[in-house]
Image 1: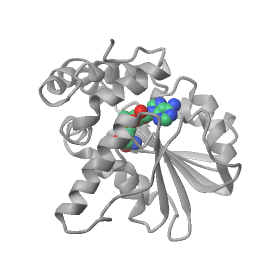
Image 2: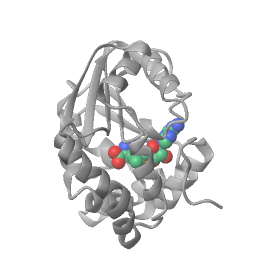
Image 3: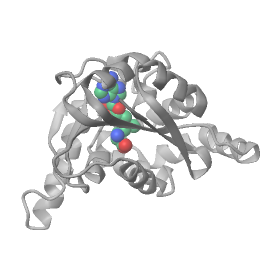
Length: 242
Ligand SMILES: C[S@@+](CC[C@H](N)C(=O)[O-])C[C@H]1O[C@@H](n2cnc3c(N)ncnc32)[C@H](O)[C@@H]1O
């Protein structure tokens, strides 16, 4: 059975691949990003005007590490994903952390099994949709963006945090070298499924740059699309209004 998806992003192969990385997903991310993942999640939370009373869908939430950050706003944040392995690993980890602190709640958020292409939610039912490091893995990203528009209330927000294209050419060359050579080697030492990180490198290279993604978000029914580069454009945070 293949342990990594191909660039055709076959949904069952993608879900299986993430099931395979679930056990050490959070720690592997932090190692491979030199700890920058925490700043990227913080920037995503800060880009949203959400708070108590708001409902936020964090789609492709994986272990829920991105959802927990959003929940610090006081909004009700749902961690949704189609990899049950990722959802279960996250829930177990966070329940364990909470138990260690003598609390049963801790950072545990509601988990929901859901496919980004067909969300089990009514029209105009959430105040914001957030997707961090997920859209690149979806078989039809444009259809998913339109599905996010369907479930978001008028005036609600979209935030897409995704790997992108460094803007300064010399840095882009060094980064591409890290991506294609060093990253898979480091993953071999840290991850529970190193092959998945070869896919990670390849899928980042094949992903549209900042302006191209902004055009696709607009075409899917969103307005006021803009983006902010993080870490020199290694990551871009696109936001839009429904
Ligand atoms: C790299 S992880 C991101 C997890 C988390 N959002 C974060 O910031 O670390 C990508 C996640 O996207 C999920 N995913 C990919 N395609 C999906 C789809 N069509 N519907 C729901 N989840 C999907 C995978 O199962 C995986 O858990």
